[in-house]
Length: 127
Image 1 (cartoon, rainbow, N blue to C red):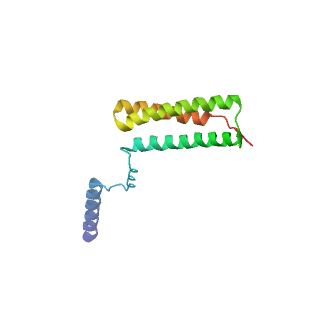
Image 2: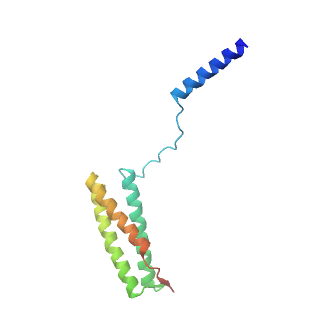
Image 3: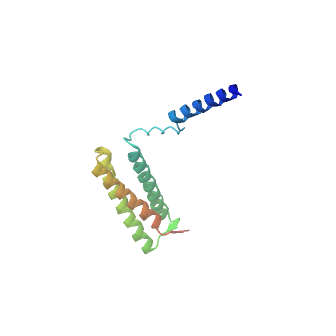
């Protein structure tokens, strides 16, 4: 009986110390940044803008090739999107060159606007 009590005491003490020390939580390592980026925000915004440019270029090429027909309303929406995209690119490049808090806030606002406008674009008719 005394042996069981000692074992229980040691077990309780061991668990108590283990609990006080705590166990580290396993976390996935942060992936490294792609070459040329200075921070995760820089990389994320750069990738978003690259995707938006690719999307816009694809629409331009399909429209020019005649495989997609844009109505006057759609053309206007895509032109507004292009202006926002070019503005966001300029603001983002200013942040990329000089990553201050003010430049980050301006770049995030501009990139968010591009994302919102892209999501709201009308779906053009594919020929």
